[in-house]
Image 1: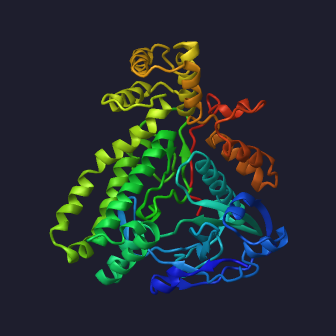
Image 2 (image 1 turned 120 degrees about the horizontal axis):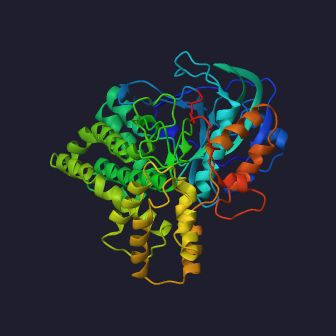
Image 3 (image 1 turned 60 degrees about the vertical axis):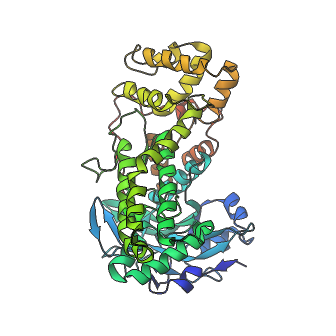
Length: 484
């Protein structure tokens, strides 16, 4: 019934332990991603059967549940033994087009890596990941996806009582920088080489013939992560917990715990309750990305120099070039947001000047770019209405107009192109929190309404004006939590 494979279990023995999911008390399907199930070629079954399978009440046919082991730098401090403390990899589904995807439970009960935790998830955080990952997919950002959320009929205690839920996550794989850190710390070079070959074959098969495969993997992951984080910044996304165990080899966004979207722009904006030093602030994400890649390089370096000692310098140069690589991806994401189709040497400075002018102006990140498109027909006043000081962006706007004049286009057509890449609807923090609170109380209507909007983020819907705005004036600062 399921086109399962278990290549990781076959090829990476020692990187996991078999574990069974906990049996739920009274499972109930809360969110089901039918389009994703169809795209994956999953079998036809009724809701009762899917609820039983995706709650742990019945074994998913063909699955071989395992908990993966990995290490990780958490807020800069190395923990040599982490692992799936509340997750189980069921296996790899082969989609109709031949692509391979992990199917994983999250919140399915304790494992040997739970570290005194209960291994469960509250329903709200499971639904949050479902919502956020669907929003990111609709925005074209590489991301894990969510197949389903099932309420288990049980309660969990997270400062206060909450209903429990199990999320089924879909990912290109769950290999992460922390996987390599664990292999290097516990198993040595041969295990790192084995893991590197598996990761390269699975995610970057065109590089399998490279002269130095571990170095080729480092370059591929560097490229994927630079492109990913550039996209985060272009949409105002703050991941919130960029520990190395949350950095995928595939370049997908993973772990939607304390993440959030910017309302008012601020380079140093932090939402996570545990990020007191601002390590994972919005504007610091490229710096942390590079730091995380250095940890991957440290785990790979023995394998790299075993091929050629001179490639130690190649690895160093690769990481030293991260800034330029990231900047290239960032401006490539920013040009269409600004209505630009051609490359100009001054584009980076122009885009950077926009954010410098926005600092302290209370401008809503998402609304601002829609206002820029509107200003093509309405004039600067459309932008002035978005900032505290109406004149704050006038000089920048004049520079932008001069740049637009270098590639003439019909203003309406240019505005339409901008609106096609600048979302109108995002998973705004205050609306997301309100929808999740209602969902945990048994009312799914607000969640489903918000989900429908973020799945089609570029098209205005009548009667949905409140979803276009940030939190009301005077609302308390938004704070996110990891949900464990």
